[in-house]
Image (cartoon, rainbow, N blue to C red; front, side, top):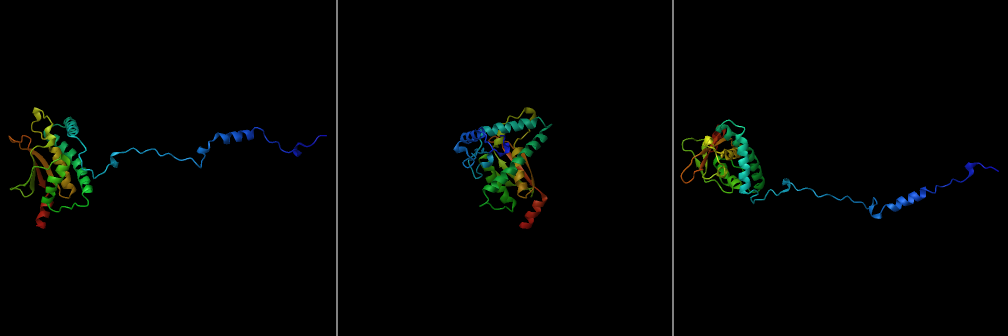
Length: 228
């Protein structure tokens, strides 16, 4: 006698349980979601991770000489005369000076004071800034006897001129214009706008002697008179 198929109890697949059991067995206990952990990859250390208070020299003299020589050669290809060449080097130095001032302020933030007089700022440049960049202070700081708005920083042996061979047709070129740009950036950054230029004053004892002429803006001169 035939019976309705719907009355039969549902048959379970013989394959499904085996697949389920095999899939459960195939997952190791150590890799279950409750035990999985993300392994952090080590972050690459960059220059921004360095300690800003580090005072030891970070660049060898040979590396600096090679890099500056490349800057001079690159600048020489894009200028038409000595004056334009020195202006280019001064612009490069200006960018460096901005960053040097920022770094110096961060390092000396606890003990540094804001200079409000021209002489105090120039002494800071003559000793602190010069030494932090070139490893030694400048040789002298003088005020012009004839012009109220002129000061002179003297370096008897500028490091930027030591390893530069100037061609004969550009014998009047002074690559220390790069240093002049650094000084000008520091002056401007401290709210003492000025024009700084480098002038060769060779002597028998110091053939590379350079005078950095700092010509103050009239606003600075007027402020100095007011503060006397």
